[in-house]
Length: 134
Image 1: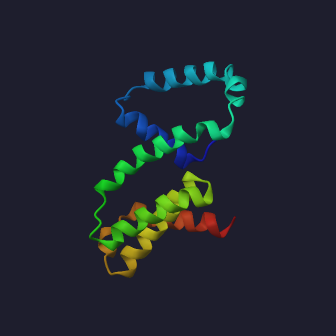
Image 2: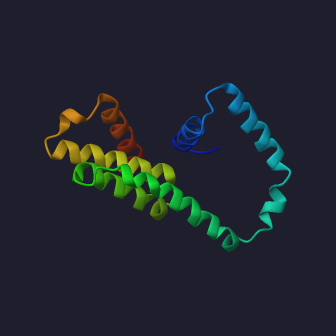
């Protein structure tokens, strides 16, 4: 199992790459089943051997940071919190959750509460409850 947020992010990445039908999900499912047979082989590869690939993926992910409005602290600080907290918490889901909480707190705290949608308020409340009751 994976956190629902991670599943959503992966799904969004598939849609962004052009997969818009159920056939994409079926193909990925079949490939995951096939990958189960290769899991022991992949387990033989030491963790330090994959560091280069992870750094490359991080570089690709950082290209999205160019689209952030760096002139507005209420937009840039949540992005920074998200990017920093993912590796520090060892969880993509927790990093995204902390980014949402920071975004809503900064927008509300600076009087820009009109920029916060109802769905963001709800997500923020859910994420706060998640962290409060863990």
